[in-house]
Image (cartoon, rainbow over all chains, first blue to last red; front, side, top):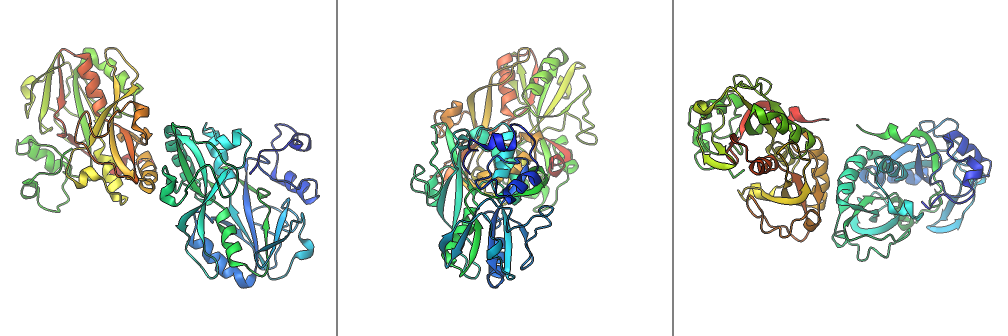
Length: 274
Length: 274
């Protein structure tokens, strides 16, 4: 979720309307191994979780019980590396810029290709990401401070418990964006249209009411200032399922590396509910 | 906007689905001369302003320039006592429970029938009212403290200037309802669907940012407590055009008496935009 780094321009061309397919091809060829913020920005990007089939049922129920932090865009067939509902010719083993491999909840590596790690019992979950609604907010004329400042969004663990399923449980993680009141109202309207990418906020105002002690010390990402005429606005965050997985400590799991998402063929506007 | 008084039950029947026509007939017969909160509550009620044709063009432009506080539901033909788009057989001279007559901005009387005051140059404006969106909020499961406590809603003059038109100008007047954060989010969603009855809030949070010094001292209506885990939420209010009229001091004007609205045949749900 960091800013687009120097080098993006030369690789992708400034101002070009990048197709998801073109960007995925560069990623597949190993020519792009970093985060995907700002790439193919009309397109939906997704958080990736790959689990053994023995845990897939529990994780699927966890997502369905917690749709705001874990909005499922797609679930693969066991062993199937494709995701036909999300894009033509997606190969989940090659099309994410950088992966994280976990053994019993411990980070075991950050490869850029997982072809040699693939197993016939693995199931891929793709979960909506706030890039989509941030794009909609920017198109609606709102300023997002972390985007303007080229920082990662501020993320916090709350005291809101998710609904458990099997070994998966834990607190809801939220993102925080400071907005003036008129923009808070507009942001509720705009993000309500996108339930598949976290939807409406889950809290506005006093952070202590959801168990956040200090807005200047996020649990993940970068701190961002809240000005006196602004309200902190909190959305459910796709880090929530990652926290649940770390807590569940599955014997084997692969996720995307932070910010290095799967770029799908879906357009952000296709997700709008009205 | 006060609570339904004792006596309503016996007159209208407890729990009956009251038709707008039935209630208007009782009003027309002089059997109901009080406020209309809670009567025929599926139906849209409207603020009423009656002005000479010489001022009607300016007032129409004022409403069109300030759609959030002055959402126009209907404008009559000059001299025409009917409002066919709002209901069958409405007679604006008899179908409002109580009127206020103004001469040069001074209150000159509160009759229950204006047949003898009617002139061929008078134009009737009907402006949406927050009863409609309050009904939608209650149906969505929200608690509105002033409704539960049987009080009038708290109203405040702000430092937000309306767009002037001819002699009509002045500050936006707002209503304030205290809500917890989750209900603030839901309230933005619900009221956004009703642009013809003030629509989404115009402010959330710090009252001083819109020129309100003390929430415990409303300019109109009754004070209502804001609890520590609540945010004050502000909507544009139909008192705004009345304040503009008092400031313009027209030679002659008739309005409804506070809370004693015109009950239309429109259903609240007919106003929903999606």
